Image 1 (cartoon, chains in turn orange, green):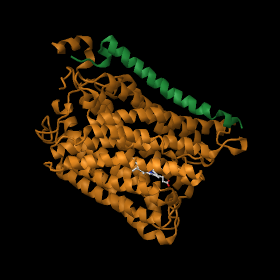
Image 2 (cartoon, protein in one colour):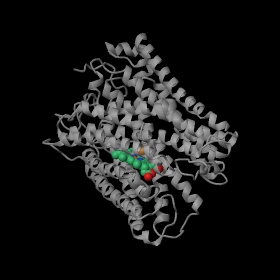
Image 3 (cartoon, chains in turn yellow, red):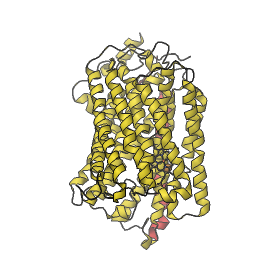
Length: 528
Length: 44
Ligand code: HEM
Ligand SMILES: [Cu+2]
């Protein structure tokens, strides 16, 4: 009856629209989620290609292939593409697919805005990348856009800034959509403290996005007016201060790194219980830890700028507040570990990636703590040690969690099981090579190799070669990921509704058939 | 039965609209505030 009802309301609703229009005018959360994920995968390979070029140049000391300006543009756009083009859209894609299914809703709350926020992205990245074709080449001042260096860019400068404005608008719209969906569309009985952790971490991430993306937009707007309209926000000659830019940027930047990791925490918190066949240990503590991390992320920003010459009291404050984040982060690591304790563990690809996340993200957390020690950071600042730190938290951290999530939910999306053997190959090759790629960068940094430099002293040669070889293997291994996905979309053993086991998992998404129907819950499920 | 928001009852749709508006205004507010806060410095 309910079915007939809805049908009368909304006719085109039950069957999928066809042709290119299905994608251009998409309002369905699954279609938009798919577009986000495919876009992110494309950007992952584009950013990965740039990374391989960087590693190619760094394979040997001396200048091999690129002039320094082009090398610097590669470093700058690699970061922008990976952060704003790969990791963030991948999380939004997962949010689109999973949030309605996890809260028992038929779709996202604001489907048209959902469409805009996706379709802005291709334009934003076209703007950004088109700058490579202009005189002077792409942006080369680093993703942090510090003035006065960034102001010296040619045509790439305004293009980059407009691109960042667009990416920001897209993220803000996506975040509004997530919040409104979770606040308004939950099935009856789904109280906030029954919300799956992926939804919780995304809800908190969405608030972070709304709080800090406008700060980034403000910062780059001020750069723009400094360059073109004669203001001097960051120009000492007119009374401004370039260090002020760094404060504003990192007031955005540190919450941004948590935007890149909180949804990953959510994914891992879904996977570990499933493959331990136990409910998550300390659910409430996980929620509060996430909220504390988000709160603390606003008061630690100057750990990125210990060396600008701030007062001692400032250094102390930012050092201690940064170390405080280790407490809620420790709660999480402890809870994941305790969830596995005496569980009935099995090691399918999602669990393998989640476990690698647990170990390797923690290594990144440790190097973070080292960097947080202000006097020690004077030594590490702007060296490869920092590069090693953030790649550990971002690659075997955020990226592995995304892959874990894809391997977890792919059977639910496609209705097929994927090739487990191939996926395990993908896992082992990735997790070995990622360490070969990034671990030596700790040594290089401690020995003093600066970051963002196309050439280096000969004493750094060996570990750079090792790192480059690791990079090549890691890059090539990712082709397996694509292969597993493509095979799974087109063929494979039928997946059951529960997919992974009959006892677990317990979330609402597993009560839907595999593949999940075009509209998730036409009838609201009762949540007890 | 539940409804997607565009088919939801008016009360729920109203709440969603107000929340959307509030969040959009908050974002705009942060943007404008951060620039205005630094205007004294911009003029030197
Ligand atoms: C355990 C908590 C963490 C601590 C204590 C920490 C600490 C730090 C510190 C002190 C720096 C500045 C180093 C310098 O420039 O000298 C830094 C840089 C960085 N961190 Fe972390 N971090 C933590 C977690 C994370 C996470 C979870 C992410 C992202 C997912 C992240 C991403 C970054 C990035 C991207 C940079 C470099 C930014 C740049 O200069 O380009 N960090 N971290
Ligand atoms: Cu930080």
